[in-house]
Structures are given as C-alpha cells and as structure tokens.
Length: 473
Image (cartoon, rainbow, N blue to C red; front, side, top):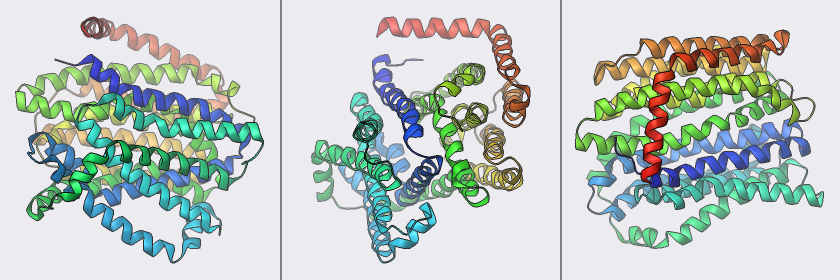
C-alpha cells in the first residue's frame, strides 16, 4: 500500500490542530459562560451543518468524484458551486424578511442580530467548504489544514480577549466570536485562491454535466440529511424535551469527543480520494481489507483508552459538569464507529449505488429519533448519548451489509462482535456509571488489556508498517 507520508502529515495537521485548539478552548468557555449559552452555540453549529448539506446539493462530493478525470477543472468548480450559491442567496433574502423568527427557533431569543450572525456563518462555511476542496484535490495538505484549524484558533484568541478584558460574557458576544472566526478564514481563503475563483467565473456551466453531477450528488443530499439527523436530532430533542442547560452539558461531552474526531477528519479527508486512485490502479479490494483490519484495532483501542481516563475531565471542568465523563464514552460512537464504517462501506461508493447509503442512514435516523424520544425524558443528556451510540452501531452494520451485497463480501463477524461489546459497555457506563463509580474506568482499562493481547500480532504489524513509512518520509 503506497502512501505519501509527508502528504498524510500535511493533511493530518488540520484535524489535529483543530482538536487541540478545541480542547483548550472548551474549558475556558465552560468557566466563563453558563451551560445554556453553550447550548445556544451548539444550536448555531447544528444550523450551519444543516445548511451546508442543503446548499451544497451534493455537488461538493460530485466535484471530488469527477476532479481527477476532468479536463477543465475551473469549469467543474463553477458547475459545482454556482447552483448552491444561487439557492443560498434566495434563502438569505427570505430570512431577512423575518430575522426574529430564526432567532427564536435557534436561540429562544428575539435578538435579530443573532439571525444575522447565522446567515454570515452559513455563507462563510459554504465558501470555505468549496475553496478548501480545491486545495484538497490539488493535494496542498498544509494549506488545506490551515482552513481546518484557523477558525478554531481565531475563536480561541477572541475568547481569550474576552476573558482578559472582562467583556463579552453574554450570548451575543459568544456567537459573534464564532461568526468572526468563520468569516475571516473564508475571506482569507478567497483572497488566496482568487485566481481559481476568477477563472471559474469566466467559464460556462455545462448543463449536461451539471445534470450528471446532480444525479450522482443529489441522493447524497438525502443521505446527508439523514446522517445530519443522526448527529443533530439528539441536540434538537434535548432542547425540546429537556432544557438548554442539559443541552450545554451534552454539547461539552460531544466536543470532548473531538479527541476521536481527529481520526475521523483525517481519515475521511484522505480515504475516498485514495480509494478512487486504487480503483484506477486495480487491486483496491485487498488494500481496503487491510485498512479495515487496522482501523478496527485503532477504534477499539481508542474506545477503551478514553473510557479509562475520562475521569480526568472532572479536573478540567467547573462544578456542574460531572456527568460529562460518563456521557463522553457514548458520544465516541459517532466519530469512531463512523470512521470504521467508512472502510467497510466504501464499496457503496465504488459501485456508484449511493441510494444504499441513504437507506442505511434513514433507518438509523428513525431509530435515533425513537430512542431519543424514549430515553431523554428519563435520562436527559445521558439518554441522548445512548441513543447516539446505539444508532451508529446500527448504521455501521447496515452499511457494511449493503457494501457486501452490492460490491464484494468481506469477513465481518469479528468486527460485529467487537463493536457490540464496546457499545454495550458504553451504554452501561453512561446510564449506570454514577452508581458504580471508579470501577467503570477499571472495566475499560481491563478491556483495553484484553483487546491489546488479542490483537498483539496485528498491532505489531501496524507499528512496523508505520515505522517503515515514517523512515521513508
């Protein structure tokens, strides 16, 4: 398996740095803002993520899919970005006619300025998404990484300014910091890639090509919406069935799961383009199976390691956040089971049958909503966390089975057994960990030892492979 280690490190810098800055910023935010305001910030992020799914129209993924074989990449860029930009402009006009409505829905406030910040965030995130994709496909890993972590760095700086000056300890200032962070980076990227953008403006949109790209990407919108529901319905239903304080506590746990999001973001950035290259070269199946085995080891070890040391969060957070250490392990289900699923389900994309991804996401989404409605009234934030990990467990199995049937079969019993054990222990920890106390973390440490012993040979092979790759870098 040929891998450019320098390139990997360049692309890995962004997610790692973003997670680091997020990890530093989060304790600062919890000390200076109430949990309710953190919950409102989470609702802003939910809105931005939903908007990206809708306004990109799946054309961002079609752009990646068609890039390597396209002769006129500037025209391809315009074809991908123009429809969503037009739709975003129309929706912006509609929202500006009644900004108070958007503020009430998201933030339980009538402050119209908050709605304006949402619109700026959405536009900035949309622009940054496509401009970053240009850098990604040009394999400019370092520049791509800057776009990942720079908004979080700017946000950290602004929160630090607030903390030192004693100003800005209200929701409007908190959301303003987030808005300025996104906007400034999007503007910087537009300046740096202005030539690409200017050249694209001169191109004509090929309607036939746009139709083909929409046929590929449009089903992914619904798959994306269903997946967004998997990751956002917990927050929305917590706000509806509980309160903003519980939403804030839950959002803190989700944010700390960013330690695992590093793996998810790095892997997703590199995986699909690399597999498409392997497909062109031939022999993709064997390489995918090797990567699948290695990812199972990494995911299992991370689950156990974080479950073992999550008690340390009590020393990083103020009083009132003691529940976070128990919720965290179930929140890991989203990034870790998703990244493992990307290796098993890549056959769906290779077979160009993306409707199966939609079906799997819809089933898991329905299960997620049902579990949230059942568990949140009784367990609040803990119930939302359990609903999330169980839903992603189901999502993983459904996608793997679909890939086996429409592309190529692969051994998966070991994976199913391992992730089921991890899921059961995570649910047990989240719902009953407060009764068991420190023994919960002992269970995770014990499972780590067992799995490490079971996978000893494969761990040794993985470390040897990494050592060889690093020595050649």
